[in-house]
Image 1 (cartoon, protein in one colour):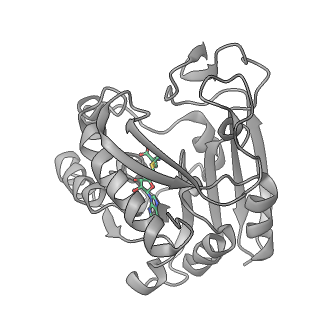
Image 2 (cartoon, rainbow, N blue to C red):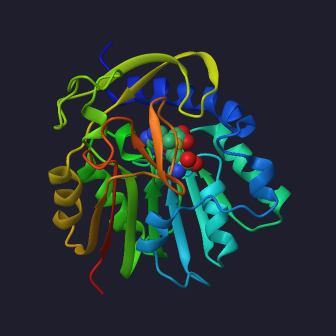
Length: 271
Ligand SMILES: C[S@@+](CC[C@H](N)C(=O)[O-])C[C@H]1O[C@@H](n2cnc3c(N)ncnc32)[C@H](O)[C@@H]1O
């Protein structure tokens, strides 16, 4: 399969995420009933990078899945727009907003196609993406161009995600199976989800991105890096072999305190 061509990878990933959404909606991992009752889906890592006061802030959430984090930001007063490739995700996000009685706009779009589908150039104070997002995109320069397009001058971009080193490891954690660097698409077939659910087997197409790519793409747009942190834990217990090393802090078993599990950064578009 020539997964590098745009239509190939988008079709595979769209089908993959459409299949994931309903399984996730029902999962203990996402705990929709608990969230509706008031649980927060945001963790300390992303919250430490986001502006403290989000009231009235126009916020664009890229790759929002079914909108739980987007709407957690709406609960903090942000005026939110979520974007996702999966039409099932966007439909569920609308449903979640209705159930929670929160305002949120959800746009069905590929990240790269968003400027053509959402007429809001320079309209956002904050752009945000987190936990399992850029690995679905082949080209971070195009990604940073989209972030730049939508942020107002002086606006901030925040990403929190798993560390690129995590994506290098083999499933049994005994070797490095994948390059740190972007060496082209990684194509896999799986029936399992990180939520612990299974679904029909789908093909997923992803890319590894080292920090040179992430930072280079943002700095290349003229953004100023304000904060950058690496952590030896992540908030989400979404690997089969984790240990809890603190409240809501998970590390890979045997690599606690050794392997960087996640990172977060904040970059600002010049005013
Ligand atoms: C792991 S989820 C994001 C996690 C999210 N923070 C959560 O847990 O709710 C990745 C999301 O990226 C979306 N996605 C993948 N490729 C995309 C693309 N090219 N454009 C927009 N969204 C994309 C998927 O549909 C999926 O909902």
